[in-house]
Image (cartoon, rainbow, N blue to C red; front, side, top):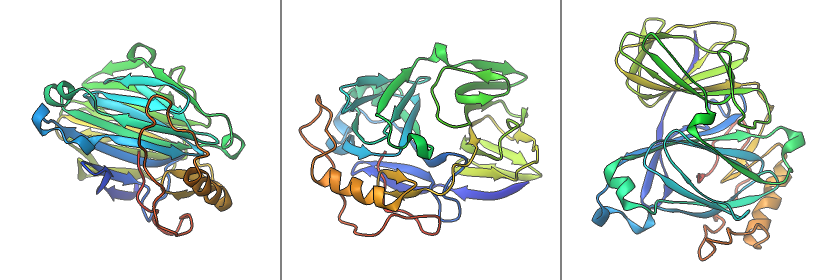
Length: 307
């Protein structure tokens, strides 16, 4: 029924901002094309308490798409394409790094932290080899562009991909599904069919699968070919994700590639300033980490990553 249960670990994406990190994991590098999963918050701070270093400074990416989705609060995204976009709950920010992009994430409205606790899930979706060097791109999708389904204690929104007959216009590069699901206590739910790799991250609450109970902060990875029933033991929020695997990917810091040498080049490019900073946020940035290790493959965990 379950191949693996991954427990979230604490990590930091900036000096003042801790998150629960789920992927990558030493026993499971990817789930379909998803190579990274962070759950940040909830963080609720009154303005005098908001630390100056909560922001995530400009930093680079290659070979992936970052997907940001909020439960609460708001975040200002700026990138080297010149995009400036505030993301709010129910929206999707989909940034494709391709050959290289830099972006920042700043928490510029103290009222958003105080009034509605900041809570965000961010994933990275690895790109197929043919798309790894494409031109970078960014898109924001509003809630009305993301179809919702409700039935018998189930509410769900399709964030991206194709699942349960729902589709949207979020541009993806390989077959995948990504859903936000809210279950009332006692509700029963299944998984999308037709994908070899499928998982459910319990963001809130507790669910039962095959007679065992799983709690918030756990990612359940299901055995291919089986159709499990997920039962909400209490009001619960799940993020369902998975899809077709892409093959081995190497990851180091914020860089993902099918080729080790490409990551080494990205290190050099960032250190030399060849990946542009956001034109409207270029006064500071995250320097290349001093870790000199080779990119991690399927056998060892990567160094610290930023969102």
